[in-house]
Length: 86
Image (cartoon, rainbow, N blue to C red):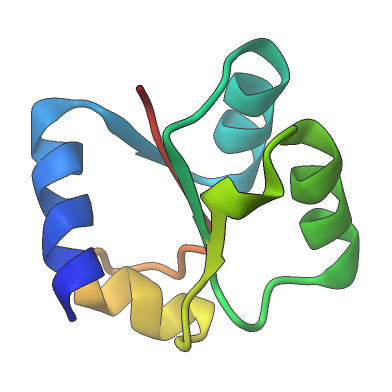
């Protein structure tokens, strides 16, 4: 997927963070460039993300569960949320 390769580049540059708590903390303080969420993110986490982001167009739900998203980024753990910083 094209978006996965772009996210990998942003992680290498230090412009992307992952993990629900870190992402939510960032979203409450800053405006993100993009927010990527897994398709199986729990509803309460999804609601927290949506309430923290002003521009809902910046949120993209990928057609992968959190395990697939983590593996596609080369991580040995599930990833539910990724925030790309401005």
